[in-house]
Each structure stands twice: as C-alpha cells, then as structure tokens.
Length: 432
Image 1 (cartoon, rainbow, N blue to C red):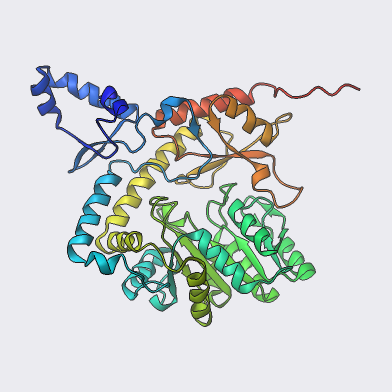
Image 2: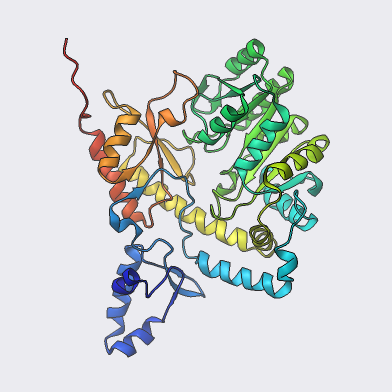
C-alpha cells in the first residue's frame, strides 16, 4: 500500500477494495489485512467513511518529509467522512441537474437567491433568522474584509483592533492606508473601559474583532462582553467588523456581536475554517442600507464567487451534507485539542473545538526565536510578531492543530515543541 501511494499508483481519494477481497486476492488471513488497514489509518495514509468505504487520505505521506505544518489554520481532516467522495458525489449531482455552460458562466456578484437562502440558514445558529436579501455570497473572507474597508474607510482613517490580530486584516489595512489602533484586552478580548477610552481619543471608523476562538489567542468573548462591545460601538458611532470563521465549529455557538447592533455591524463568516479551505465561499451580512454598495464593491474586486464552489456549498447546506461534514470536522478538532491538552497543558484555547492553540513562552524564549528553532526541526509555527499591531503584546506562538494528517503526527510535533521550550534558546551572547 505504501509503495503504491509513493509511486502514484494510488492517488488521494481513491477507494480501496474491501478487506475480505484483499485477503482473498493475496491468499492471507483477513486479520492480517485488518491490521494492515489499521496501521495505514494510524499513519494517516487512509481514512474510512461509514457506508462509503476506505479511501486514500488527501495528505498521504505528506508528513514523511519531516515538514509538519503547524502554521496554517486549517480545519482537520473530517473524522469518518471522505471529503473526496463527498465532493465527487455532489459535483456529479450538480452537473446532472444543471447546464454546465450556464453553471460556469458569469453570475450575479452577490449570489443568486437560492444561495442567499442557504447562507442565511447556515448562519442562523449565530445570527438567528435574517432576511436572505441581507446575505451576500462572496469568494472568501479576505475579499470581504477588503471590500468592507474599501467601502467604509478613507486613507488615514482608524480601525480599533486587538494587540494581536489576523495578519490578513493587517495587510489589507496597510494597502488601503488605514491605521490600526490596538486596544488592551483580557482573556475574553477587548476591555470595555479601554475600548471606550480608545474610541473617545481616536474616533475610529470601525472596530475589528474575532470574538470566537480569536486568531491567534483562541480567546472567546462572553455574551455580556459582546453586548458591552456593541454598546460602546454604538456610542462611538463606529462600525463593527465581526470576522467569525470559527463559531460554527462550536456545538452551541454564542450569538454574534452583530445581533446586539445589527444596524452598525458587518458580519463575515467563511466556510474555509469549518469545512474546507478549498471551498472559497464566505457570507457577508450587513445593514440593509449597505447591501447594494457592498455588492458593487465586491463585484469590482472579485466579480463573483466561484460558481462551482458556491453550488457545492449551497447543495451541502440544503441536503445536510454541510452539517455532516461539520460534525466530522468538529469530532476531529475535539480529538486533536485533547492531544494538545495532554502534550502541552500550558497552552490556551477557550473551546474544545478550537483548531488552534496559543502558547505563552517562558523567560528567555521569544516567539520568533522559537519559530526559528522549530523550523530547524521541521516544524512550522507562527510567532506573535506576525500578528502584532503594536509593541505591547503577549510573547508566544500560535500552534494550528489541523494541518498534520494524523493525530499521531500532531502529537509527535507537539512533543517536539515541548522539548524545545524546556531547553534554553541558542542565541547571541551579550558580553558586557
């Protein structure tokens, strides 16, 4: 099996024959084949799907090169569900019931009504019932964030952020000449009194936040804190830009900050972090008075969401495939969080379903020095410096749990990090 995968004879997503059939073909006992399949699954080469069979894992043998990716915040491989098989099945269904020429033609930039209805349904656990007309279907969260800043801000305007925030938002703001002003936080996020003070002093155009499993610290705002942030935003006449990629990973998500101030909120939710990063679909919910202008801005930036990806997302939401896949991702996320809890108990995450953890570093270690030391051992991390919006911030690294193809590879990588921080960093000596 290993040789066939390395040679390319078996490709990611290929279905393997039933174990009994293999045993008969090879003339061996079925328990031997069962043990082989089990070992291959442990090594991350194959994955099983109840009722569908066993398939070659999308990342089979990828980690054998010794490069374990703990830097990209990916949802983990869904436990017990073959993403490849699900994609093939859905794509075939879409092509059978649609005219491929029309499907792959230009489409309305904000999404068709059916796609908006599906988006409203997907977001209901976080936003409650919302009119589908307020839902804009887009080609990813990064596109949406660029469109929002482009629409509400002019060069020189300010947006309040946390001391450590999403690097993609930093890049967009820098391109548009928007100044990011950090606000002190605690374990939940913005300190209300500090946010009120910053808003009074700087009169920002917006407040950007990731209130659920914040990137990178994995902190989650309580319900009362969300209400308080919304109240302060209203008083300051500042727009709330709520980036919410992770809430649907939670079995019971909290109401979005946007529910407390819908008339002042731009709510962004991507499918990339809870289903698959290749599913380039995100939803934007904004005040009704802004939908037309945001739709025009999105059209100018990205024209439209990818038609096939939008069709797949809509089909999954309608037929329950999205919830099945989400539940499988959630199960694996919880299992990996437990692995991280056992190996690195000092790391932080506010929820069992979190796909990343935050590790505050002891004494002599700095985030960047640990990142370099880990890279030398074949591990990729992201240090605090990549997220920093000012000089005052926590010293640590974000560790993403979804990238490694198996829990065993993840556990080994985390043990490597635990060993590293137990050592003294190798740096320059200061002679005085």
